[in-house]
Amino acid sequence: MNNSPPISSLQNEVDQWIKDFGVRYFNELTNMAQLSEEVGEVARIISRRFGEQSEKESDKNADLGEELADVLFVTLCLANQTGIDLQTSFDRRMRDKASRDEQRHKKNTKLK
Image (tube, rainbow, N blue to C red):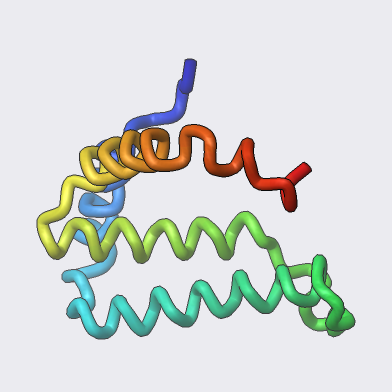
């Protein structure tokens, strides 16, 4: 059983943070740019730490978990400001993926 808070509670937490500290949400285009920037930071860490590029000294202390949390934060902001219940969307997507991919990955010889 998953003991994590539901996504809706994370959306509420982000919304409260915006009200307490953020003044207002950045507009959707700004948040989309922010999301792209944060995903780029995740990509940089992964490509250097797990890929073939050498890791720069300045990147060695980068925290992948914090960067992933930044991606989540901006994603939650975008969901809030566009009126999306991300828990409902996530649950629906997981049901769809389970139905669509029930045997697909198990039958993929590249994954053996």
